[in-house]
Image (cartoon, rainbow, N blue to C red):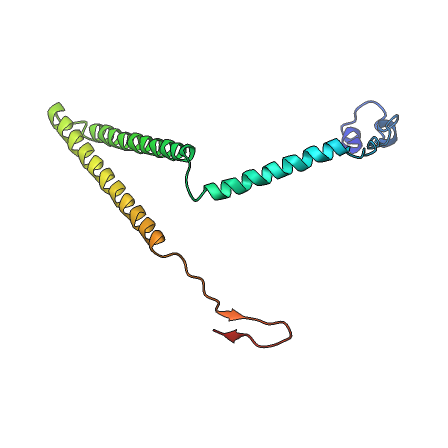
Length: 168
């Protein structure tokens, strides 16, 4: 900085020692001495830990049988997903209709309306077919997952002591 100021020929003493005059080295404040927790505090923390462990265990056990709250969340998520799907389809259909209307600018109004309705109908049918295929594939994947899970097989094992791995 002092070099730049000297190069600019600015008035005033711009030496580093002048700029740093009065500056001090920052020394962070000392950390307060750690106070040992009281017996009451330790008992409270132990009780809270036991409660948290019990809640975690209950959540693990509950996963096997969904509760009504879980069903409500699933229903809400499903309704939200379906609403987004319907809005996406409507936007696609309307956007296609507008694009066709603008593309057929020189045609008569009756022909333009027919083209837009036909094109939008084709887009709507295509959206339904794609979504039906998606639902079919999801259903197949769920059936496959329920039918048989992933089977894990040990291919090789190694022992400590330099022995060769035996194949199974």
